Amino acid sequence: MRVDLQIDPTATTNHEFREVRLHIPSVVEPYLLDLNASHLLAKSWVVPQRGMDLVFIAAVIYGIDKAVSRDTADDRWTRELAVTIPVSDFATWEPVGEHFSECLSFLTGDLWNIRFSQLDQPLIRPKPRKRRRRIPAMQGNAVSLFSGGLDSFIGAVDWLTQHGQEKLYLVGHYDRHVHGPASDQKALIPILIRYFPGRFSAIHAQIGLYKKGPDTNFRSRSLLFVALAFYIAERLGPEIPVIIPENGPIALNIPLTPTRRGSCSTRTAHPHFLFLLESILKRVGFEHEIQTPYESKTKGEMVAECRSQQALIAGYSTTVSCAKSGHTVWWQKRTAHGCGRCIPCLFRRAALHTVGLDDEDYGFDVCDQNITADEIKEDLLALASFLRRSPNPRTIARELVSDGPLQLGQLHQSVDVITRMIQETKNFLSAKASARVKHLGGIP
Image (tube, rainbow, N blue to C red; front, side, top):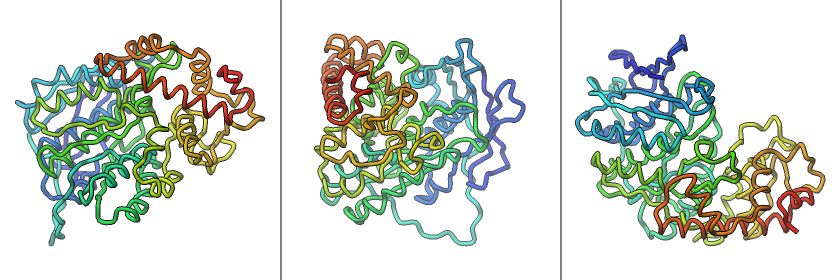
């Protein structure tokens, strides 16, 4: 399926970005890209063109990912998607089109064909102003992704605690159709200010589609996060590192059952995806290293080893880890922050249990002795099945490699962190889970 882009040379959205429409075959009304340039201009009037190219590429890919239903694919999953994206420096981007296609295909589980063309007008068109306010110079010694989850909060706390008086730039993203992430990210800012005043800056960028698309997955969102982080790093200076604070098991996302292998497994921070992406970005001239400081840590180890336990205790309950936080209508406790039975929620509970902080309400409580069979949904069943199998290191290695290439040193490290995650999860369920859940997981 070829998606055509139309950039209006005269019209500008109310967010100071050119009107960009995505024309999807068989869809009558094109989708209008929602990229709030005013969020970027609020930090600096200077627009780094290479960084803007990357943000635009990521925004287009994210938009297409949301706009094209997987039902259009022959197998109702693997879409064939082709698009030509205009960039300000065609000569630089044109050689990496094939590499970008490979990287995206691994990330989203589709077959991408990415090409580039020369952009003939600036994408950002600032509003005319009688007087522009003065914007302080941007400052930061590193850029860190900031989703509003527990990992990204710990990542910020650890870096700020560890780096004296150096400054950190936090980069968040949200979609107008998914309001939770924006409020999740902003709710943590006052807590960080309390413990690290004057030590960080933050941006929360709105990117997506004006009209909600048919696909609800967020597989391509990590590309947007990285693109925004590189945009900010470009403004801060050369060799500013970009930090992805994600625990190892979630980044690897080992298939818990055979049905979750391959394209059905989320790879938003998988080492192979990040390797491919960083290789591409270096080829087009970016000088920023992607750092993954927690790739060898379980979530529980991140919690237990957090460098400021005071800040952690103050902020952990404000963070949100749930993959299904918008589906509260089906929850028993609708005021909870998480469903309690998706994989991120279960790993969160196991992690907080390690330090005695598993004291939060959830939409469903897997520790409730009265939990019914109907309330034990797919993710919990898959995790229980995985724990019951109790895979040995050789099996874990085989499962990891089946889901994506890993270098030899990475494979040994990855097997170790998955093994520790299994024990961490078993410890939590053994101590607290209902008899029904324990039985499913083969836990005494």
